[in-house]
Image (cartoon, rainbow, N blue to C red; front, side, top):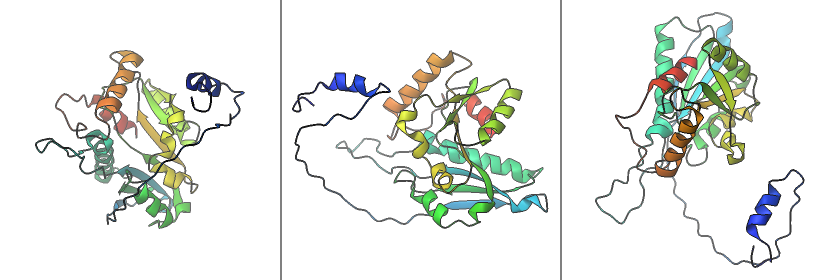
Length: 264
């Protein structure tokens, strides 16, 4: 920006205004990019539960969560822990859909049929869910709705549930009704500019016309309020996200996760 005679901070402020128009960046830069390709084979893991209603069992609900993570990190220290466990992102989501599947299978079974889809290679570009979207095991027209669960923070009970991509589906109305009964509310994603709606597996089905709900842990905590919830999320993003530090701890407060899974 300086080479183009522009002040970066001032241009950033201008870009935040509704009347912003692009500014030509009259500067030249030379750079080189080296790509390294690695071919892997992986699998989606799918479970199905046929609905109890002879008519409505032809309609399907799908639950998605990604089971993959990033393998190992590079380190010059041979004694360092380099395994990216992905405990929050996304062992919590896989655990959630397994728990939901177990409860539904125990009965009473839902009227509609349900597919539980643990997809692979989300971290490599949503490849597992994209494959399912292109090669569905059931016709996409028969999927009446789906719920995606990705990275549930062990931050304790919250007064709200955050909907990523708020306004994208009427399934939010159903969620709102359930939450109202429990004295809770929906909060829209506070940072849509981060593009989270386009960075998780639901989008592979959503863009095919399947109504999908991506619900996330709320930040307005029962203990500590919104300030505590935002601080918890920031600490995770800054210090554990996509790193070996994303691992299970006995200090986790699972009450909020349990509360949200029961809503789903």
